[in-house]
Length: 277
Image 1 (spheres, rainbow, N blue to C red):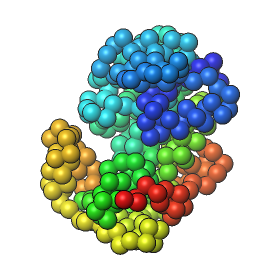
Image 2 (spheres, rainbow, N blue to C red; image 1 turned 90 degrees about the horizontal axis):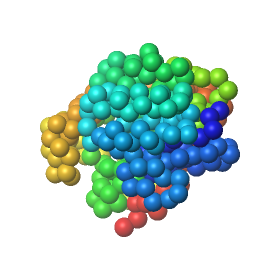
Image 3 (cartoon, rainbow, N blue to C red; image 1 turned 45 degrees about the vertical axis):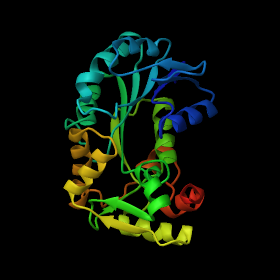
């Protein structure tokens, strides 16, 4: 176990949960953030090479890629090399179930870490349940009684970010390095129609799934302020889901944490206040 762990994106969806769980184990935690406020916060921006200083005194890191670009290996590699030069030996990368090793975006970072770092793990979770409570679906469920997607009736093994964090902490604190990847899902695969039905039951309202084309979804992302190229990539992920590649569940969470992952229904019951107007 390292003396201190740097949690990059430590105020984000998974990062804040990883930080809390690490502190509960007694670990020392530093937070890499673009907007440092607290004493444990360290300035961090993947686009700024000076961010490598955030790794000083750390020997492990939870690594979250930038969300505003897609050339992840190009921008992340120089800083990760600097981290290794400063003594960081263990890296736990948050990737995605859709991104294979050596593929696009985090897939390239995955491949590079596996061939370079002495201790590493890559977590490839399915889609976050928090997308419904904190992310893109939260407002539309609350204000429009609607969920928009281009996935058709395909199913996804939605996972709670708390379970991702638990898996990350297990990898960061284990006595032996994992040096492998793990695909993480929730306990069941659900379509967006299914999630709309569960949310309807929990909220007492009729929540509907609005099925869009990939092009329509990309345009919707653009109107929300995303760059056209990034909007197209995100919409394309829905198109990939439509093929059925995410219609699966795994035992990844249980194998790493010893606990079964939480269900979407339990998640919805615990977050019902998020969807009240």
